[in-house]
Length: 334
Image 1 (cartoon, rainbow, N blue to C red):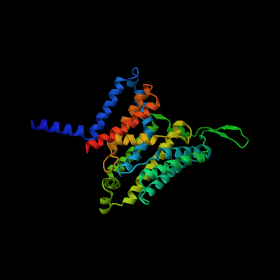
Image 2: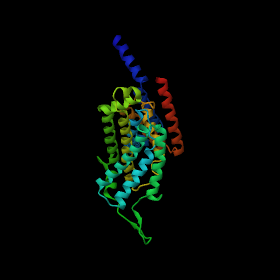
Image 3: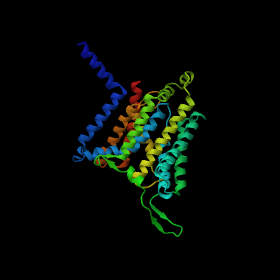
Image 4: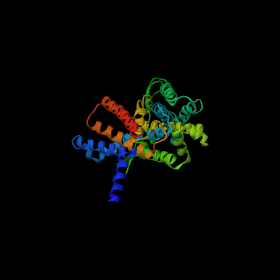
């Protein structure tokens, strides 16, 4: 009798906890997919394979975003940093024909450097994260358009005589956009899982992750406890910028070009994934496990809406509604 009561109490604690709510939300989304299956499309392996591939770029952004949000901050610039990295990687690889390793390194370095500027504005200058990253979002988008002249960077080039020349797509683009295991797992998804594992390692197994959570809980208390607040917060934005760069490289490979308009609105989806999982926007509480649930929830919801031909406008409105609902649920749980 006592054991049954203890099991019931544990079940109730799980159901009312943040992870329990996220799991329940995911099950509801999957149930919607079963009901609105688009003539059986939801039951096909290809649908789930494509869903994972489509949520991977957003998932990479969400991995970096989680480390920022647990500090009580926000990064609105990830979509624009994705665009800068996408066009930079395309310029390095297609126009300059640099070694693939060098192209990737320089692109990630650029994303991390721009993230470092946001981190310095937040941690050193002590600007509000919303203002600092909003400024970076605007600057980075303008920078992406400046270095490309507002044009997409593709394999079609115009020489000084005005002739259009078609160059071969670099192998690195084809490699990133390829599939393994009989075409059932995309390399982009593998990259997402590796980025997620790295963020999980930092947040769950490293002292830096504990410092970030402590800062989000109470920055002043963390400082008095000896936590290097400035360096730790700075590092979170650098990591977010680097993850944005990785996402930009994957985006460019999937689209076979660098688009200065890429990533517009992606910050909204990344934030939604983090928050719907249960990570608090106020900071101090969250984890990569919660973010992973949020990635699956938003990713599958988008896929279900897509296979049922719901227009993008409707999907954006639903995502906005989900963010509000997630925040309200967090407030009620306090």
